[in-house]
Length: 295
Image (tube, rainbow, N blue to C red; front, side, top):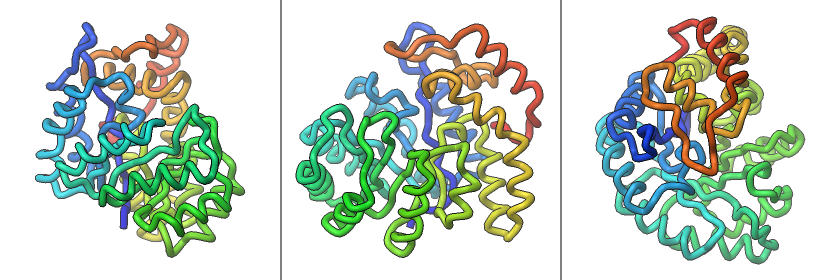
């Protein structure tokens, strides 16, 4: 079972756009020091669509020995909107023996039900446990309750769902109807308390790149039967969590990381630099946030 706080690790770049290996390792070590229970490599926050095959392999080669040595769980992002490419990504990931692979529902293509089943069965045939990534805001397609139920029956290798929908009825339905079937992972940083109240097993968090100690503490307090204390911490960091998404992820997170000493704010095109107005908002929030909540 996948449990706890998983950081969706960002990919630091040098100002010239090349991979910043030094700050990648520094960022990973800061996450491990904060006590996260897992790391997600090559997810959306890593700007994976802009990475070359060689860069993906370099990131895995740099990070995975540290992750394995720390004894935390590892998830590798592999999903695309091309079944063949997704299978190839899983075959690469398999060489690193992850606990699971993160497979997003295909974006842009908008597969019909039969195609969705074929896609996930092809991914499952590679032999690794799957985290189904449901994020309608990026894929343009929302899984119905019936489709999700069918997928979980047809593809038993799906052991978890990363839920990034904001439809609380859908979220609640999934939590209730599949509570003994899957690890339910929060994919919306600003809904973490709500997911915990629905007995979610953890979170895959982009904002944890910046405030991993916060998410770890919230998770620990909630499971120590101290939900009010957990929520009090959440309320203190909530404005900063919201600010992580003032512009498209991970642009704001990368700006925050640059202010915290983890390299440049550089994101690869088609993502660009955030506005001066949003930089000012973030600067104010960072100065007001208790430093023990930040990496």
